[in-house]
View 1 (tube, one colour):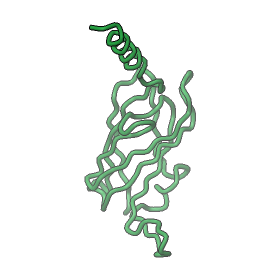
View 2 (cartoon, rainbow, N blue to C red):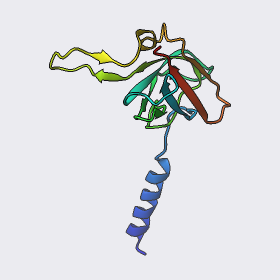
View 3 (cartoon, rainbow, N blue to C red):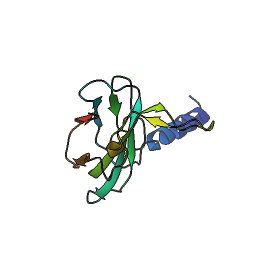
Length: 142
């Protein structure tokens, strides 16, 4: 192996070993959204709004897109990575007719109560020492 080959291999090793995530630690959070105990009428999103960060962690919002079965994985930085430790309030969106540029009326499947984190009553606390969390969120429409 030539000197140039060794230099190139060393450089590649250094570059690869320095690649890594400098992102803060997240706790995996997944779950299921139901409507009156049944699968949702369509896909939607759970919004996690930070109220108070755990000591030593930044405050950062997250989302969890759910499918037609209601299954979601919370995402803060990378898909499905979870939530930063802290206290959250949540709200849910699931549209029959989503917001659009055509001027069509927007129609949500979600009652007004659950469309705002201030009124939803949905709250969650994630601590730095928790393992992965599986949560259930039921939207009561009746």
